Length: 290
Image 1 (cartoon, rainbow, N blue to C red):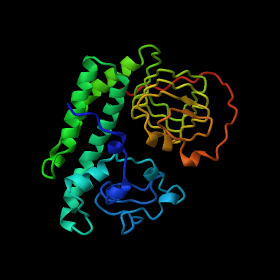
Image 2: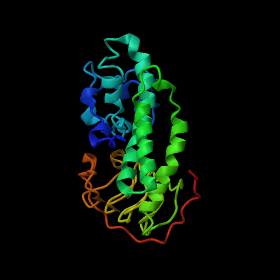
Image 3: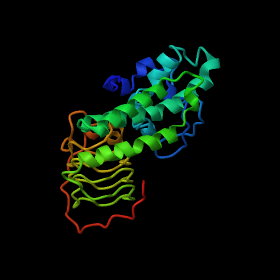
Image 4: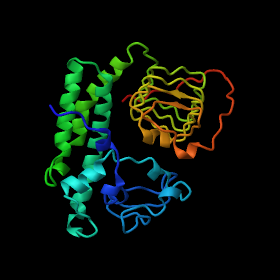
């Protein structure tokens, strides 16, 4: 069995891509994007060299959604491997196929990231073997050629993989199992009194939630929506399945404690910790099961 992917394989390398994330996806005008854009239509900010013309000013220009997007390395795989370095600009006949392949490869690479994280958490045994097999299967899917990759049923593969990720999470949290808020609607919730150590927050909506000073160590944050969540002073060391793009969507400052693999986003630097009141406990909203 081949070794798991390296961090470089699952990290976006824009220098080896042809701006696929700026063309293939569609987005609608909202608080995340200043304009409407159809799938396959180049963003007006995309330069001829496949770089973003406002990359260092995306938030100021109304494109915070772009700052939190991550292709998990799918862009360079499609560009360099599936299409052998071709560019949709100079080879227009490849454009539709390239965009379709990217749309499939991106969620597969995201699954690879989660599986690789789960493997690192899991000791030798049957579950680790199953995770290794799932990584191998997912890598084979991402390696499909231009004719076969768009036909991959990503939803079906995700349904096979998710139970393994859940088992890995439960095993990693068994010593400090916290509350179960899987799929919970916690939009704008004041959670400052909550101890979320070891909590299950898979798929939870934490948009705008107040998490100042909250302990989230060993909590499972798979797919949790942290847009605008206030993480100032929160302890996220050893948090499970927390990706950098989730942090990029949140608020925080230098007192937010992170694992070594994560970094404090640049837009956090000007924030300072505001002393938190300790109000009465807020009842979490009804859970959305995931």
